[in-house]
Image (cartoon, rainbow, N blue to C red; front, side, top):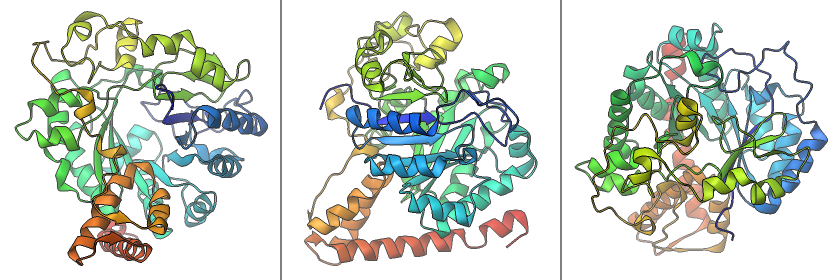
Length: 429
């Protein structure tokens, strides 16, 4: 496999949206907005074919806007799954009904990311500009759980919800989420006028995420757009958190990219600079030969990022550097670390939790086949949990029957956690 293979591709399939979120990097349009220049269904199929040439088996994050408002979204999801992608959907959750969740399962979608930005419904609704969307998001989680569709909770931290992050993580765990992803604001799109948290708050939040990594068995807690997590983990008294919670450096242009509704390929969603458009060049050609991506693959970092002893583990957020300076290689203005020249572990000694499958027992073929159906973001936990069950039973191998038993126990646990949660917050059953 080539060293620069896209393991994750984020695809904004539409600018249509039923919400008007304050932080939207896409500046998504309402239902009356002009979306006539978006890729057609046939163009989407061709794009999926091209992506499969360089990213076989990658995770394809199908998002928007609100992707469920695109009329052909189920066809797109089905086609991407048939081509071997791990298809996941990013949604605000409000359109997710029992029928929607069931159709997504039929289309081969492996997981759904649902946005939730506050424990206070009013704050969430004000942030999203539509009344009732907090309740809709929680209802969407319940629909996913009912139909066995794994879901993650996505939260963007800003000044108004900074003090609620721990409560949101607790809520997500009780609701049965498989992961909690905390995104850090990059002031672009509609979010360019928002008040970001301070660098001190940013690093305090990362410290908190390091400290609580092991408190939520069965649910991963991860920072997104926060390569500095490594620095905070190194400073933690619990160095084990460095291994289990390790986030890789920013993978924009190296193992990750984003595609806009109109077909522009960009390093990430928060950098509106195009490496090429799939209507003029194939995705294969853009990924392999773009000068912009070449710059990310052979970076010349500037400022303190360029002289930092952990630049190979962090490298700063290139999107934030670009948003503040217009230079993708500038130092990250949100980093409070001053380079010290200390010794750090080599990259190959690190073990990213979300990509690891460390088998300690023999797995029968059918059990391995079932594991292959588990989304990448949950696979490490499944291996650990199922092998733990096997050892507790005195078994020396993992069988398909044990996998089925583990899934049944997990479903029962999720049902128990979620019971009464929706009615507690909404007064409805």
